[in-house]
Image 1 (cartoon, helix red, strand yellow):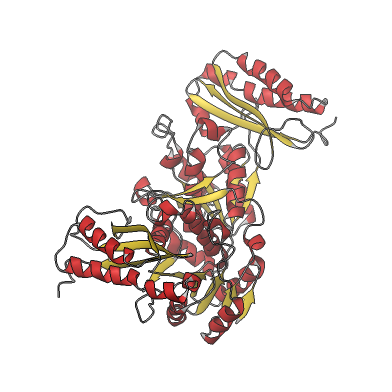
Image 2 (image 1 turned 90 degrees about the vertical axis):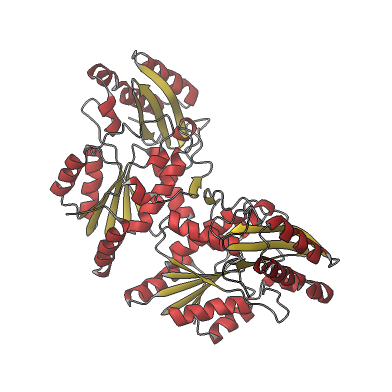
Length: 286
Length: 286
């Protein structure tokens, strides 16, 4: 396994892999790898000839009062986990390598990035699109893997790739969960043991939504109120949003008669956690 | 010479050229080819193994009251000119091929695209960056050629390529001029014979600026006033802007002690014409 810290070195290695006709897969991460990331890497290893994992905590997707500085950085453990999975290349640039000068060119996902997480984190998807575009241009992967846990990010990236004709195929990978249902996230590390127990209410709320839809409930507001109650039952939670949206533009639906995503973001102590599930009201009948 | 109208076909042809190890050059145009374009194509032919000319009048870079609909379309003549210069591939998509759905992802050049032409044409550079990015992803050129006549566009594209790590080298080509100095432009076709004569005042003004700087004039305002007078001497002119800017971010300078670009845009009857020259105050002494 090679660890490359510079763009020049990475381009050279990738160019060689390309000339040998290998298909290249990219798993973009901010490190602090957990089982969710590892399932992306495993999919990549199975489906591509050459697996690249990028590890970069991207400052341009964090707001001024967010957790960029305290975001967990565990490079040695990450690198060992990648080695164990036979990753071919880790691209781990520092901030100066990725942003050597003031960045003036930004990629903006209109109408896709201004609600849900985009509403509470202005500039977040601008930063995500811009850094993912940079990574795509540096690595030039044939396939890139994104987790379904970040459902809006996945929608934004899919539209970016289509709108800008990136020669990259986006493959989404299902959310990996703890035994109690909590979605794997690097930010779970922020939780105290007590908060960790409370955190299972997010997935419980999502399964409640699925049950209600399966039972025939078509009114999103009724469902959202039920979920709100379930989550607010836990003393340390503060709801950012709960929303029932279509699967393409992720905009709120007024009635549930087609597949939807139930998406939520909840502050729990120092952590802001997100989760979602997709539900098809027509195929989930028991 | 191949003429491809679809992205799928173009990707296939380009992939083949890539596997044979050919260097690929792209000359992006909106058609209505003139000698300026042809000099870009000639440079590409000399410097690259495989020359692609794209011809696409990009609607997203035109404002609602601009000349998108009446922009000259001369495909047969363009195609004949390309054939004569041994172009390998013309990529000539229609609007539906380039924008099959509502475009939601845009590339925005902050601080670079909001003055000069960006001020009088809001959204222009957003459209340019977005379509150039699409063309780069479709053609995947090693080198792309842009004319110096569109100086701000060149600066915006260069910053976009650097900021987003596009694996493309941008090569600027000098402006080609008519015998009386008028810069070649597809929009010169809008001029009446009388306006065409008046149009030479743009280049006369630029050379006047060069002479003043060479003679030691360091005050941009003094120079701009002199240019204004020269241009307003022609009855059908209406100045959009005259500006003396640095060569990187194209922002106005307060004194001329390093290389600058004198850039102007002038309405002349139905045409809005732009032109510019670069002047180095330290090397132009007679």
